[in-house]
Length: 191
Image 1: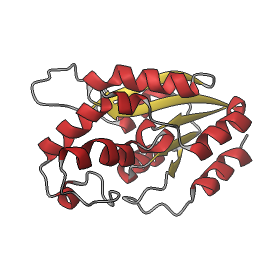
Image 2: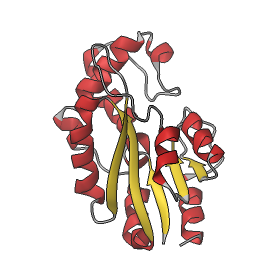
Image 3: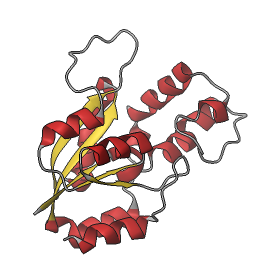
Image 4: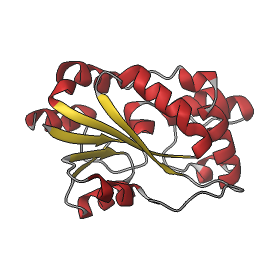
């Protein structure tokens, strides 16, 4: 059985869009940004990295974040083909937001997902052990991984360098040549 490692935020869910709708625009009443074209969207939002991350982290701990719906096409794919693969989640988040993320992942995808991994996104004042610092370093520890799905070109490049078939999940901030259906078709062909 082939192994797929999935990114969580903005792949299995629509975190950035939901955060803009349910947090940023509420916190910044004059903001007219409809959807982020970059990640991080600090230039688009005319804000600092610190302000952006603080708002995003508050949202990650909010009831609205717990209520995020899975990407519909992915949920449909999991229902049809999920049992043909072995699944992991690998996310990069601050430690304080990992437990709600794992809860969300297992609530929606627990029928298929068996492993949840994270690389800490450092925050000021945190002192954490220096294990794996990037998704690439974490993937190198996994052993056999057939597919890696992420919305970050940097993470996809790191996985590709390890010999993993890495697919860039389409988002406005990347240049993925795949549509979501095409990406899922690529996985299905290998089931």
